[in-house]
Image (cartoon, rainbow, N blue to C red; front, side, top):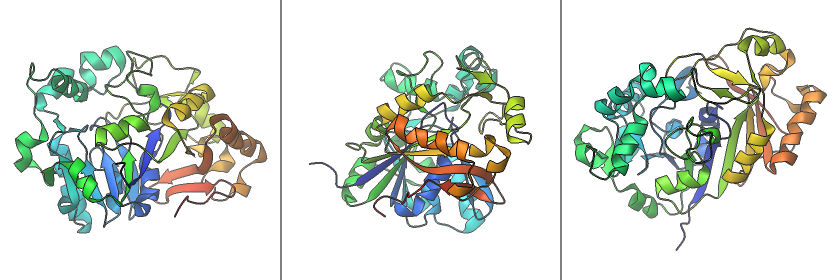
Length: 356
């Protein structure tokens, strides 16, 4: 019997850092359950009550005070980071996070040994392929070795979590009428089997994989988030079609721009838009809707635009080409992100939230 959930996936269509966190926050009050299955090597940023939060473990849907928060069986968890996020949010706002946080007992624990093995941004794996070196790959390998290497699961240290360790698949089955959002980490171009191996992450970054890692039978709707200038992490992070510089981007948009990664704080590499990659990512993910962020990088007049009619006609034409090329619907065009304004966006013509 198929689940009666309505399952929405939010995924990245490039190399990560596309702005998935703000999209999840925008969809937060339209869903009841939020699931994250990645590791702490990816940070998702959002603004809540005029404060920026960069979440490495908790799903960004925590801003919906009634929603359940789930770390699924495929998650790689750093308990310290997770607990610190729970405590920080509860202390800041008085929100109840721990009582609605559910951690699958089969989720993998990222230990200090894994982090030491990879060495963060000074380790061999970072220098070789640009990995964050947080230890996520080492933790996944230990689980794959099925006992040949030391490996801890969440059930081995349930008392250490601010949250309930349980069978989250059974939990989801009891909430069969829920609207579930799967929060993807990283991006399609970093997928283990489909990216530019070996310059990839240790998992697949696609909507079907998110469902599998959460213990769900599939996805009903996929939102794919992309950006005008894709980025890769610093260092030897792999081939990058039409790589450019932050100076060139700054000249185009009329202000100085430079980006650093959420986790490692290193300056990102930046490239021109790759339509072929976006088309392929939309196909593999089964994307229904497209969100394009960082449109304010395209032109000085694009900063903080909130109406479609304010977008220069030449740019409108290229934006609408995304619909035709990807066979997915362009929804929001992100035009700014700051602690003062939050996420600023213009809505594509005639777009309304589906089914809400």
